[in-house]
Image 1 (cartoon, rainbow, N blue to C red):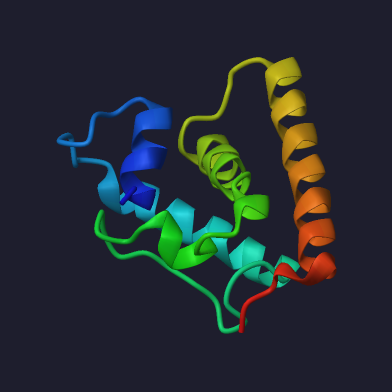
Image 2: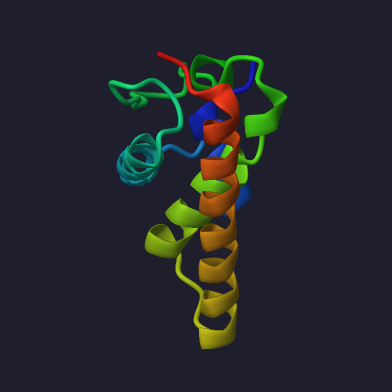
Length: 115
């Protein structure tokens, strides 16, 4: 069982036990989930996390076609929590987010949406 919060924290840098920024990170994760809801990904009525007990399987279940949701959430959180100083890195991250949004739309249009 893999925690959404702990995964994103690990990618951002803080260890699981360091919880000083948990509230900030949770807010940004939930904003990214709101974006996914608007894209038609995930439960129709939306999704949010409260703490480290919320798991990736709660959101994507066992649909392997949606594994890149993890990268999408990480990139969206990284941009607001710890944005890159280089404009070229920022542009690359935004391009990757745009590509992932397109791919998520394709995945959802091919019948992966859960209700």
